[in-house]
Image (tube, rainbow, N blue to C red):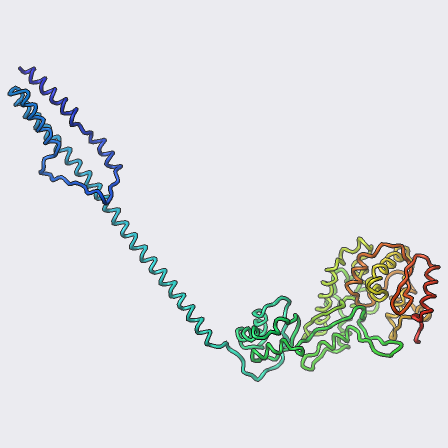
Length: 488
């Protein structure tokens, strides 16, 4: 009897575990991975309510008691009681797990709502700042539109020299005008400048403009022809000092004279004599470039040491400077122009130093027309290579007070550091301001064997030859045309 009860109880236990078994550990792992959302409503189990699993087990007990009869009655009640207790404990654990999941979901939702509120406040603050800035900027624009810039009403004050640099805009010129005290504000000058079409053709240079001028008057003075100062135009072949033509007696103004005339501001000018004296001072102070410095220091006549170092063409200088400052500015600018032609690299083609090339270019300028410059340059190079005197009349005329194309036997016999009839080699200095064309011709002479040339008529026809006999015949042609007649 006891064995039968024992076997029945064992069968009941095995059947119950097989049909209703639920591994709590596996369930916890699934629960932890489960992500709840707002569409799932968790079910809560009252602690007093019997779990559904327990109900199912009681139903199974009744069924099995019906099958086994009274023999299983007592044992069935004990098994049912144990199963009910186990089911209650399992239900309690499941409810606790669902509660924890619900708590985590609620916490995430609360944090999300807090983050959204914070982002809204930040966005609102940034928008308010941007809006306030835009409103302030718009207000300033409106105020400036109806508030005219500060301007002088007059009367005008003393004249100031203002420099307009190449490529400057109206705004940059306005800054200079304001710094010099010409206008009361940059805005006033700019507004007047954009209304004046003459600003489109304004040239770089120096301008004398009255200080404390109304902006419109300052612009009008700037674009007017009478306000430009310190602008000098030097023709090719011009020399530092004045000279007189033998035939007409007319004075040919030298470079110093031209600079003096261009230096006048409000009736004050730098004189010819002041510039001549300044031109004999220390070459370093006068801005003589390094490539010419050694030869310039040895020039026998200090008043001629800057010959050729002030270039032909249009030059601008500050007329309010001292004579030394004016010459230094012009020499420095001219040196930069010369160097741009390739002067410093010319020795490979002509065998000369940069300063010697400048000296030779000044001879080319005085002896040849543009079409013949490269050939005359070759004659110079060829004669220097064989040690033959150059014998150029232009070098004889250089030191004469009265000049002409022809020279006398007495003039040619006079020994000077420049007379190439009385000496071999190049003159002590350039004899004029060479053009850039003459300089380029001397830097790259045309290939040829020529040793002689002569201009045979007043139209400038020039004949070249390597034969001295043919050269004498060409000189006869020149004499017949009258070009070599002397006015002395």
